[in-house]
Image (cartoon, rainbow, N blue to C red; front, side, top):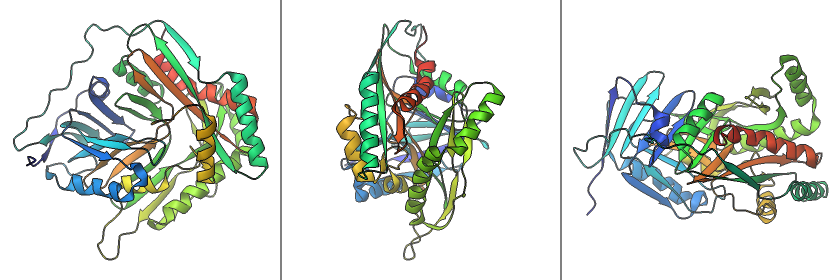
Length: 413
């Protein structure tokens, strides 16, 4: 007989350094501008053998979280039992979620700690950060494909799009970095947070990154998404950047790529909402090295008429992933094409990464600008959206820009 779990949440004066907690061995962290959560230990592991494609399995996650007895003195999103996850890009691939035995949280209203375990469990101590360990200082980089082969792959995709087989396909590159010593996650997380303060910084079981793209966020009946598509470099010179952004807005190719993403995502979200606001024109999201066309979508979820139930953040993510921002359109044909030509299994790259609590609130980013850490090896990923007017050399240059996000944090000679 399984011992019942109890989740006890209490306010605390201040949370520990959550990036350091998440970057320690066995730690997990999610940090956005609104909220930060970091967990250690494992009170419960929830398997999704059928992946996000198994809608019944996804819905049972909510039931398992609700089965945990909650004693919550804070009562905000991210309190009570929280399940962290980084799920595979392939919706049918197996995945899992983990409820940490101790989770620290912080938002604009204060800090808290949640302990999940048998009755009377005590919180874990924040883990010790690497004591005396030195980060690597020698690196070698190996791409999954040479530049010529990758450009040829783009050229082939453009041909298929012009022939009518696809409208858009997102193709990715992988760069493997071998170092002379194991990478230190806490160091990398700190640099990512400093370099990209507006991004969602995460580390889930060695899958680490700083994503600018919110797939779905839910708080009560409020839902939001922030899709990105269309990219231009940033130079650091304000006049030059203004010109680059103007060209981005004027580009029929970039606007079409963005339209495909927003239109498909809005259509998917409408099924869940009693109201949905989708701006007619995009804005620009400026990051350290690139600018993206961005559209902020917000809505109010509809409750089930019979039960009053509102879908959880995880359930919505399962329905809308993969969006054309990371897969393409038509979805099935685009995914089949990218899986046939990329030359590697994406794993968690471009999949949903985030958290969901027992109330169904949560947030999931797209796992882009990301890497997988495995001792002294890091595998980094970056993708581009290919449409009929794509130029192979320009798309290669875009991947190089995007890879800078992780290179600047990981490779420190």
